Image (cartoon, rainbow, N blue to C red):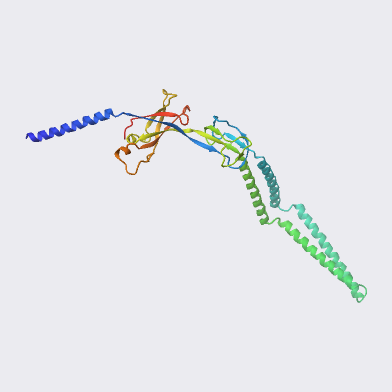
Length: 333
């Protein structure tokens, strides 16, 4: 009966000893993970979308700029003259299209009718002259009128009839007005000219280099008079947001952090004014890859990049500045 009791007592003793050892390890393990790194921010190389000569630079190195601020301007005088020419051409085409849509004026129709009436009168006179000559010829057995006079009278009548037909068709066209195809063609030509003007205006707008976001000018790479291209940056802009501290965590501490974990960031310049942040990125691949065949010791030397995002409302952090990161409760979840 004593043997089972002894076994139970031994098992209980081992369990208690294990718990005491685990608690002592937990007490010895630091609750705060301290890491060291450098401040990092995004940078933008600003260049014009097209080619041209730099006319003005409106920012200096170190200037704080707001999103949408004009930083540089190209010489766009040639484009402006082309735009003015296109605008004048559009005005002419608009008037022409309006004329086609309105059709013939009443005065033009009245003028066409008058011309038709005159042509009909000429036809009547030519016909009367021919009848008169034919009557004389019939009474005199052809001796009172020459053959040439009769032929000339017949030709005059034919010419008068042709002119009358021409004036009749002209009156018809005036009454119908322009063809639908002519109006559509004028509209299409106007649209082409408007698109050309819009393109010129867009190119003029691209002559102003705008800041894409709030930031600080780090470098001024061109000067007024330089030729700018899409491949030649004019400014290097450091964005004020977002900012983060890039730190590296050893493989043994990797399990103690997780995304979203709260952090405090301090610098040598403001050691008593921590900046609140949080873990935003944990690399899934080691920064430096050891040999293919690893020993237990080599695996513990691996480091992983971690980015701690910070809300630097006072704008005290600078690019590359050393910083200390404290992660509270740096324990694996």
